[in-house]
Length: 206
Image (cartoon, rainbow, N blue to C red; front, side, top):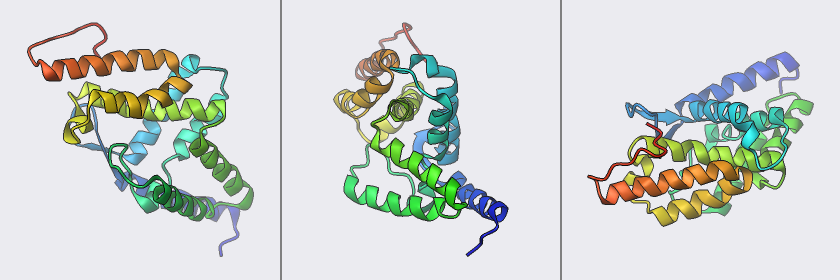
């Protein structure tokens, strides 16, 4: 096993390049293609940088950004699991934990322990930092769906009630001010989808 710390870090960085090939369900906003998981991780980290003032409580933004940069690294091994996919949470957690152990294990011991602990903290969503990070991880695809006329919601026949249930509690716990906007945007989207001739301009993301 490699023990040179620099080589270990470079090996990890090379391995997570594969995240660029993991295709998510969410479209990019010009709708030319689906986004990949590396793009998603970068985008939610930018959300954290710019929206930290809206966290439900004081957060350590450096830790939040670290969580968001690494939260989907496990998808290198297990792929993306869509929120509307109906997969087994227990099986998903097991596979992702195995992936986290392998991938972070490529790093030097202390750095591996730090990032693995941050990954688990994000997954458990108990700390204030993790609650905010989790909220942003839900907000980004929600806004993508609203901005693209439905996106994955249309493809998966998702209802407004499912959106409120699957996104609402997580976003509201970590970022209540943003949930107020997201809820309104979602309601407007589904109102328009039922009545296509209706238009609204109140909080349009387009």
